[in-house]
Amino acid sequence: MDKVKAVPATFDMKANAPRIIQQLFEHAGIRLNGDQPWDMQIHDPAFFQKMFTKWELGIGESYMDGDWDCDKLDEFFFRVTSHDLEQTVVGPAKIGFFLEILRQNFFNLQTRGRAFQVGEQHYDIGNDLFESMLDPYMMYSCAYWPRAANLDEAQEHKLELICRKLELKPGERLLDIGCGWGGLARYAAEHYQVAVTGVTISKEQQKLAQERCVGLPVTIELTDYRQLSGQYDKIVSVGMFEHVGAKNYAAYFDVAGKLLAPEGLFLLHTIGNYVTEKKRDVWLDKYIFPNGHLPSAKEITQVLEGRFLIEDWHNFGRDYDLTLMAWWDNFERAWPRLAEKYDQRFYRMWKYFILSSAGFFRSGQGQLWQLVLSKRGRSAPYRSIR
Image 1 (cartoon, rainbow, N blue to C red):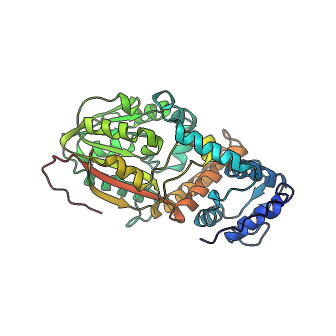
Image 2 (image 1 turned 120 degrees about the vertical axis):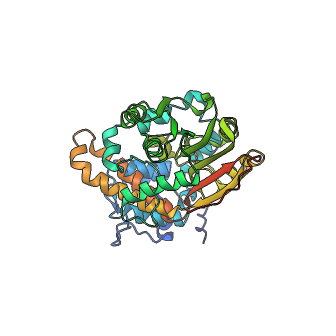
Image 3 (image 1 turned 90 degrees about the vertical axis):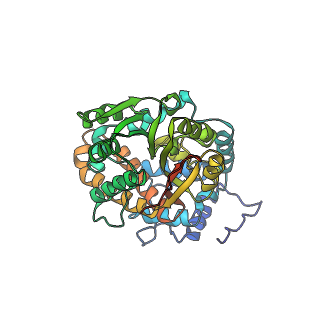
């Protein structure tokens, strides 16, 4: 990537913030008030000061405030992420940038005491929102699109893929760490006749998951993974590892190792970052997923060494772009009804979240991994499937 030219020391950065920001965006092929659908349309010059002082937090909050718009936010963020502009910090925002790196690297933001915070702030927003946006199984994670014509098919194909990778057999006990609204638990119990224990840190998820799994051998518990006990034939965790935090990876996999039967399999489905990130996006941390961390392949392999064998590593991160755009279409169609409960600022926040995420995966920086893990002593060979 070409480097942005350094600003001379005598340059008045505050007074020239609009010009500096304009040059940064032009580096990614984005023009301010340009005529391309990914160009920014500036409605209020307050945008420049917000971004100059708070960077990604400033640009996100400025969008929520209505200071700027863009016809194709997903394409805007595809260009921003492809050129790593989120790492190119100038002006007063540099101080906050480095302080945030220190905060995220020196403090454990995912302790037991903080484990339920993301459930309360995000997953408990309202089941009506997620029911409107997601598929019938309410899978809030990347779908599998190779042979699917729509979101519902793609999510069902993902569920089937997971069950087949786990080699589920009737009568087995399956532990679902981070079970969401119970979609996978319900599918596995109905189609593979297994008994499922699902755990979540969201009260609203637990309540709806229990309702949706009535009559099936499914138990939904409100608990942190570190409090689990017992033994299971198979373990699955879909879209939950992003909330564990690098400082807790060893504990997480130690818990999984303790719970998994000697001949068992553990499938980990997680978003990944193609580089080890210095810090989490501050806007995302404040408004969407507090205390999150996207793992890199290096972080995962280092902690798995000596704990699990990697039987399979499957990346289909580009499918998340399709999934997010389908969620956005569903949300947009449902908005006239949802607007009775959620305000316009929430609408802009949610639009920013969904479409910026689509651009993140479209650029290849965001990936989606499914790892199948086993204990070293497992006697049966494993054959990967797709």
